[in-house]
Length: 572
Image 1 (cartoon, rainbow, N blue to C red):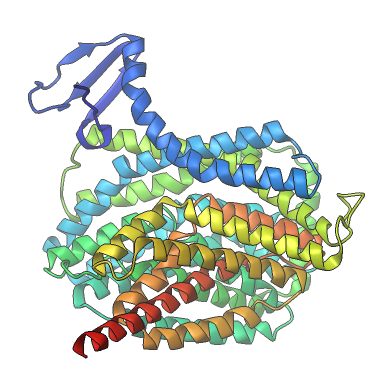
Image 2: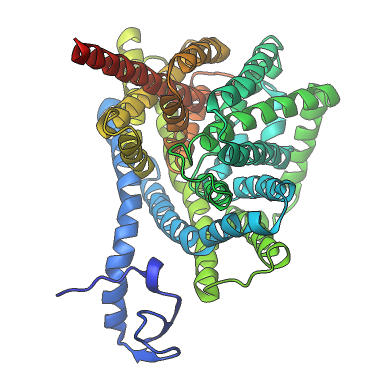
C-alpha cells in the first residue's frame, strides 16, 4: 500500500542538506530530533509528487493561455512570437514563482491570519481588532503579485497625452499602491464588522458604489481626469488576488467565530466585493487631489528632467530589472511579515507555533515573489503586450505589420473581439478559485444554483467584459458609458435578488482576477491601445469585473423565478 505525505499538513520542520533530511513530528510516533539518512534519489522521489502537483496547478493556468495567444498570433495574424525563448523562460518563471509563492503563503503567512483572527478578539478591544484589520489590508496589497503589473504599465503611458495617468503610475506609484491598500484596509474593517454583526451586503454595496459612480462621472467631464478613470476601476480588479482574499478572510472569519457569529452561511462573502470597490474610490480621490496640487505642465517638466537624468546616470545593480524585482519581492513580503510578528508577540503575547515551518514558508514566499516578478516582466507582460499590439493589424494599418490590415474592417474587428472573448472565457474557466466558489455556492443553495451554472455564467461574463473592453478601445468609447449604465442595472438587480445571490454575484468578479489573468489582460489592453493610437488602454479589467456580476445576478433571478414557479405548481 502506497502512502502519500502531505507536507503542508504534517511536516513541521524541514531541512535538506545534501542527502540528509532532519525533520520533526512527521508522525506522532517518531521521536523528536530523530534523523533519517536518505539518498539523493530518495529525496527526489519523496519531493517529486508533492512539487509536481503544485506546479501542475500553475501549468494549467498559464500554458493554455500562452498557447492560445501564440497560435492565434501565428495562424490568424500571421506573425511569429518575437523573442519566443525569452517569453517562454519568463512564463516558466511565472509558474515556478507562483508555485513557490502560493506554498509559502500557505505555510508561512496563512497561520498568522488564522491565529490572529482566533485569538485577537479574546485579548483586545474591538477598536484594536479593527485597526489591525485595516493595517493588514494595507500590508497585503503590497504583497499582491499582480500589483507589480501597475508599475510596468507606467512605462507605456505617454506623459504628453495623459500627464496625470503617467504621474500616478510613475512618480506617485507608491502613493497609488498605498491608496489602493487603504481601500482594502477599509474593506477589511467593514467586512469584519459585517461578520460580527450580520449586516446585509446590499446597503454596503449601495453606500460604496454610488459615490464611486458619481465621482467617476465628475472625472469623466474633466479632460485630464477622464484619462485616469480606467486605471481607477482596473485597480479594483488587482486587489482581490491570492494574498488579500485568504489573509483578510482568515482574520475576519476568525474574529466572527471567536465572538460566536461565524456559523452563518454568508461568512466569507462580501469582503471581496468591498475590497474591489473601495480602492476605486481611493484612486479617484487621489487623482482629484493630484489635479488640485500639480499642473500638467509641472508633470511634463518633471518627466523630461527624469528622462535626462536617467540617460546620464549609470544604474546601480538594484536599479536594473533583475535588481528591481529582487528589491520589490523582498519589500512586498518582509514588511507584512514583520507586522504580523509584531501583532503576535506584542499584542497577543503568543509564541509562534511551528517556527521552522513558518520560516520555511516565508522564505518560499519571498523567493516566489522575486521569481514571479521576473517572469511577469519577461513573460506575461511581454506576451500580452505583443499580442495586444498585433491584434489591431487584423482591421487597421499598424507599423509592426507591413501587410496590415489583414482583413476587411468588419471581419477584422469581429476577429479582434472574438479573440478577446475567447481569452476571457478560457482564462476564467482555468481559475481554480472559480471551481472552489462553484462548489461552495452549490452547497449553500442546496443544489439550486449548480456549480456548472455559476462557472459558465462567470466565464461568459468575463469573456463578454473583455470583448466590450476591447470594443471600447477600438471605437474610442468613454469607459463611463459602459460602467455607469452597467452598474446602475446591477444595483437594480441587486435590490430584486435575495441576499444569498447578491453575495455570490458581487464576489464572483473577484475570483476571476488572478495573478496570471490580471497582468496578461492589462498588458494586452495597453498594447492594443498603443497600436491604435488610444490615449490609454485601461478599462478592460473593469469591464471584465462588471459583466460577471450581471451574469450571476441574472442567473439568481432565474433561479428564484424557477423556484417560485415550482412551489406554485406544487401547491396546485
